[in-house]
Amino acid sequence: MLKQPVYIHSIASISALGITSAEIWDNYLHKNSLFQKLTANKKEYWVSKFSDKEIIFLNTIINSDSKYKHLDKSVIMAILVARKCFENSNFSNKNIGINFGSSRGATTLFEKYHTDFITNGVVSTFTSPATTLGNISSWVSHDLQTDGPEISHSITCSTGLHALLNGIAWLQSGMCNQFLVGASEAPLTPFTLSQMTALKVYSNEDNALANRCLDFEKTSNTMVLGEAAACLSLSLNSEKAIAKITGIGFATEILSSSTSISTEAECFQKSMKMAIGSYAFDDIDAIVMHAPGTMQGDKTEFEAIKKVFGKKLPLLTSNKWKVGHTFATSGLLSIELAILMLQNQHFIETPFYKNQNTTKKLNRILVNAVGFGGNAVSVLMEL
Image (cartoon, rainbow, N blue to C red):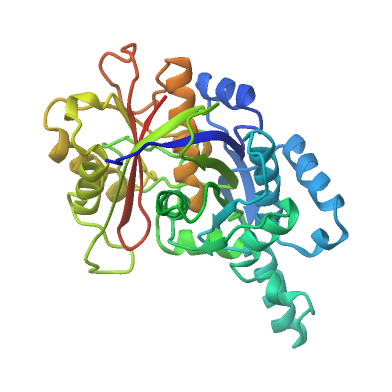
């Protein structure tokens, strides 16, 4: 639990859910997933991808600076949401810290340049630094012309929430007064899809509800990938804030394999307890779970929640049945969902897990994320 709340002044995202808050909320209210079929590696995959409208927005970014045509899609996505987030933040100056992360980084360009190298034995002049991870925050800082620190990192699927932790640490240290934190992921590439298939976690469902997250009776893995970027503006000033963070927690599992997590997700138990702090467990009204749609991932997080909360569970949900797993960005999309549910006092359920009393008042929502290696983060949200 934080000694002093950290305030969110704006949030911006781009995903299959849309790009405006109204459009995103409307997509959450209907009962359909947002998955489409994508052909890669001579195989069809369910994916969550941008509509033509979102692609037009990205092209506007590319056309705004001649240098941007050489950047990876993930960087263009980050610039787009950072611009929008800053514009809506009411921040008065450019002395702003920036921390953008990505799990996979410049997937599109890396695969292209590597293919060129294997085929021709040469690479483009733009290969480096265009495929380095630090590329994301550097270009966001360039685009906004900010003066503060800029950081990039990758901590697998909890990257976005780790960016949030970093921003909070900088603010509370007094080394920065305003921060933009974000994540960007463009994983719908042949090699990335092949990696998830090789892990035997990708969905083979034959209908559009392909990611069966929170279905604890499923007999196969049902992860679906999605592309998305998101950005939050943070400060310690409550004026014109849209939400506040009152608790954060983090923990890491002892590895038994590169993708390991214990059967009762001890990392989640620790991170949730840390974020809840001195609040009673009954004070937590809902949890936006990480729940990637894999059998082990969903079940172990559920077991951790039962261990922490006992028989009286909060409302449980996840947005991955609708928008897929967006790797680094997934935790920040969950933050966005939590804010929208608090603002609208409306709980969004998954089709596969039935909660009790979904009309109760929502005061505090816990958001979870975890990545390969069991690096869990939990964030407690309030208005």
